[in-house]
Length: 256
Length: 69
Picture (cartoon, each protein chain N blue to C red):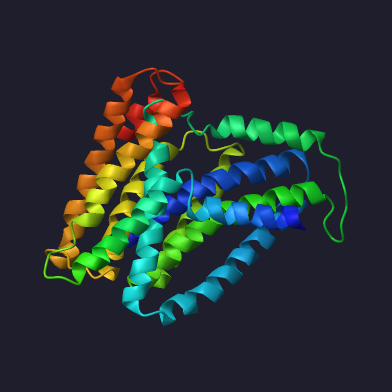
């Protein structure tokens, strides 16, 4: 796999989750207390850093074939989950991930919660809301970045892609001071789903002992094949009709 | 304590297995069969992509029919 594909896969996966985490932190900061929300972000990033620091060396110590079998299998399951959600949303069978609505829901819940000071944290609710948002959204991305990086022996590039995505999304969120509702989240989720499914299938099968025709070049056929397959399934589900939300703008988002 | 353990288990189940356990089971089976075939002289690379071609539409079909039902 080229460094470019590694960078794109990790960058997009990280950007999607960063958009969701930014929405939660914005809700906690604007309605409750920015200091507590930022403490929560710091603590969440700290937990993720500890997980990455512990898992990174452990992964590099595992024999490559076993690593590819286990990691490939997990990435394949993740990829199929991401693709499944993106296709259901694009075909109108599942509501689109609406950052503006999620933000309003979080704001409404935050306004009703009581304020409690704990230690140096002025507002425990804002702290835990941000902390959970960062850890839960970041855990899957940390795993994707680590496993892609370790399989390609280039964890620094994967880490660079992850950090770049977070910085871009945080800068955009700080600039607009509102949830990033215009980010084409579903399209990004679809692309990441295709990448995870392709690389998961490739590494998983290789780890299980299969030999790919053309070796790494097999990925050049798998990525577009799975993308076309996903688009065909989206079109098929649209035609089955009777969707929950009717024709979805996300269909054009994915297809374009 | 029991509630926290359950929540912890539920989090990891959701993280690893996700919305449809049949997909996760299908992936594990596909990799196991791939291993079995790779021990013979028959090529085994085609099995996992074929599993994807079956599991994804099957899972989507179930999700759509469940949401209608």
